[in-house]
Length: 370
Image 1 (cartoon, rainbow, N blue to C red):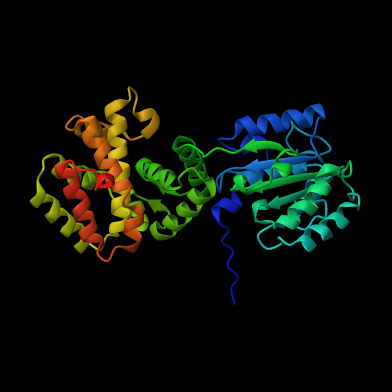
Image 2 (cartoon, rainbow, N blue to C red; image 1 turned 30 degrees about the vertical axis):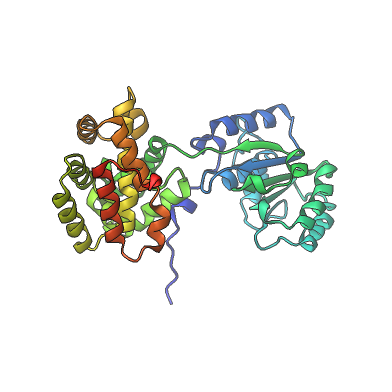
């Protein structure tokens, strides 16, 4: 049987140095400075949304603190230690998934292993992912180790839900908050990777993929992988819309044009057209909420494209439509479609629900007040 040699883009292009990490300069610069100065903490807490680089930065840091010839705080990647630490099973970098190792016995076992010094390295680094999944008794056991770990041990706790961590754990860690990555930075990452992979992609297609990643590098690259498999090396805007099921700008502008013009017949006809085309109406409703928000940004911000990052021709269409409605109308549109998210999950008829929301928008009624 042939072995599948395809490596997912997010794995193939995982950053190897602090300089390669995008959108988290406030963290990578601080960590690099700590390594250069030798002022390294014994426990770190990395928190933030999924796919923003927590585990990648943890691995880079684990290599950097052990690197024989650190380059501006990053691992050189060339020394014997760096080459050895690249191996997934190296005993000096221990990754633990707290989701499946969350019992007190797992942490007690960890406490016993901590007693053993690193082999051929200066530090032994424990990366505990999704640490919020630990049980209360496991947290208590971990606390004792965090208070007085051996000099050669560094803990890096990573979580997407920092509010679930006990205050006793938080107080013993140096905390770093990872931010969502901007569409602009995600677009740059995609453009660079597509160029290396020999993938052709329209600029608007790249922005659509970047926007769909919602600030997560990993999600963005996973989506790009799926779309490239469909497009086979030549990605167009329409390819992205087909794979993701998202709505193109012109259709949204047409739909909202009918709402602003109070054209109820046109609203029913367009919803019918969208439904018969096989489009996911739940995604369409979400896109409508996003569209209303984008119109409100165009209406109220001096430099809307600093937020939206739209192509110039698309931005002009949005600005033109935003001028056809009042601030109050756009706020009502946004609230009506956004507040329907829960109802969309359980609605017996998505089509009827979307028509009802649109009618409320036409009449100027706010769903929340009904």
